Amino acid sequence: MAMPLGSMQNRVYNPARGSRMDRIRRNIMIPVSLDNELEALAQTLGETRSGLISKALARYLDALDLEIALERARLHEQGKSQVLTPAQMRRALGL
Image 1 (tube, rainbow, N blue to C red):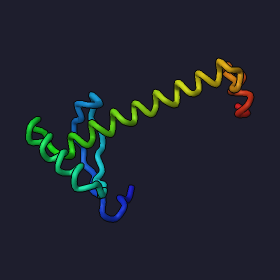
Image 2: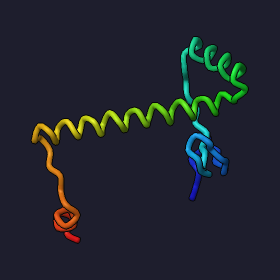
Image 3: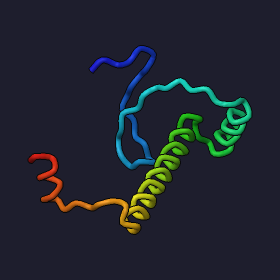
């Protein structure tokens, strides 16, 4: 599989996820004040900036997943969404 120009991928252990996973290099822009805080925390905790960003992003994405699940549950409780059985899902997908 071809890698996008400007990216680099390798195999590393990610303790935040508890498994080996592929990593990809991303270039981002953040405010200077946030970078200063990131640098100070990385030094204090003895971690890399990349490691801290990965952990923070993983926690943020987990929180978003929870928000979505709670919203779906709320809609279901209000009768505004439908839950399908596996058999109904297979029929709906034509399987």
